[in-house]
Amino acid sequence: MSTTSWYVAPSNFWGRLSDGSRAGLSAQGSVVRFRKGIPIFRAGSSGDHVYILTEGRVKVYALSPLGRAVILWFCLPGEMFGLAEMARGGERVVYAEACTDVEALVIPRERFRGFLEGDISVAMLVVDMLSCRLRGLTDTVLNLIADDVTTRVVKLLLRLDQRYGVPLDDGSRRLDIPLTHQEMADMTGTTRQSVSSVINELKQQGLLTVSDHRISLRDDRCLETLLNTNAQPSSGDLARPATTAVR
Amino acid sequence: MSTTSWYVAPSNFWGRLSDGSRAGLSAQGSVVRFRKGIPIFRAGSSGDHVYILTEGRVKVYALSPLGRAVILWFCLPGEMFGLAEMARGGERVVYAEACTDVEALVIPRERFRGFLEGDISVAMLVVDMLSCRLRGLTDTVLNLIADDVTTRVVKLLLRLDQRYGVPLDDGSRRLDIPLTHQEMADMTGTTRQSVSSVINELKQQGLLTVSDHRISLRDDRCLETLLNTNAQPSSGDLARPATTAVR
DNA sequence: TCTGGAATGTCGGCTGGCCGACAGACGCCG
DNA sequence: CGGCGTCTGTCGGCCAGCCGACATTCCAGA
Image (cartoon, rainbow over all chains, first blue to last red; front, side, top):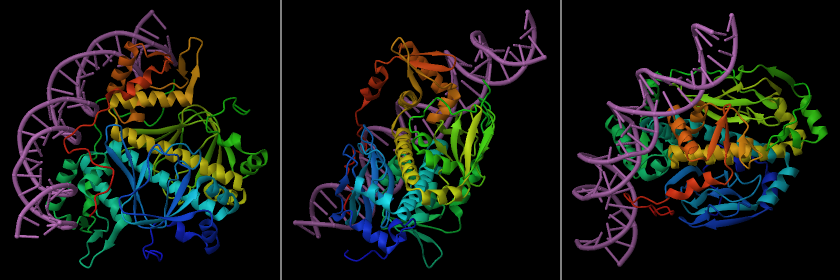
């Protein structure tokens, strides 16, 4: 765990920095290790640090008052987390927890901001990162509101494929992250049982296989075809026009 | 509509710029007017401009394949919209539409980025803006997954109050934005009928009144009290611990 | 090899909230 | 003043998906 990970995350913040910027940033904080399963920060704690993950995987999630978990995303090496409170500080609303042994560069919020002010290239990367994340979360919201459970799970699989998918010899793609049905449920706002049944349906249709808590997708784009098969507006309160009513 | 709006939005990007930055930014784009009801951009169009709203109100929303609308937010004077595609460009996923007559500074994405690179103070404001918006969207996601319809509507009212609420003489607060039940439904991922019934319940409990499509809240924090009254975990698949299982 | 905890498969009952339907009410415009 | 389109209130039927309750499988550790 002492050398830099061989794995390069898709939206790789750390890897896109210049050597100088990377060194400068490193000097702003300190490298901290967390054992698998350890909470890195909690909801309610003060959001006065930002984190750059150098090794391992981190789960970022929230807990509702009723104890329901909502997994927002998994942070990969090279990416940052703890950014949402960067502007104003204030209390965290989410938890971050080490899924594996983790190594992260931890920087006080104010020092990070100060550093950005002096290194425009890094600031621009942060802007890009935030803008991408905004876009992604927007998709999530649409997904939650507009889609039924089956669609949500299928879209989750497709998203996971983009992020964790590796091609296998036989043309299928393996999602290289171990997930329980409960976790998938927490990522899609549904229940373990529902995820179970959707996954099994897909399994029976031969669209995926599971081994060692990892899913492999048949790569024929079969899954995508499931998405657009059931689109037809209903017509009770008839379809609203896109324009705002003049009032 | 030719002078700057008297109204200052809560997270006021434009107003927080220095005079110099403001002038510089103005030179990057051009001021465009849109009549009430006119679409400013559509999903599917290329996201190669960003917008700074100087006058009026803009609705940012998406349409699901089934025609269901999802209103993400209303942009107020001084704020920016069209930022989600700033990093990578690509197609918009959302629509923006003028709720009132609108005046906006329209800047090509690349010129905006170029400007940011030369004016760190503006870049920092953009970072702050994005980070706040990220935080807000995160709340929305939690809201959607964890809360039932009544709670979602109540929380919507509280959010609207923060953003549009003005105190009245009698101690109540008026939400200074005209909304139909349909729009509130589209903001909370529910149906017009459900919003109707929730609003009426609240009305009957004396927690709010409506006139001219605008809602007034009794300011006793009565609404907040509704939120924490029903928190008790269920216990089928018993409450999961916050820690990841060791695997 | 045994044992216990976690993960998974599955089923039936229950219900929140969607859907369709329709009846006022409230403007707005000619 | 009359007519039309939009918005609001309300009801009953219906169903996707939640919930509880097992049984089973699959490790990891002793």
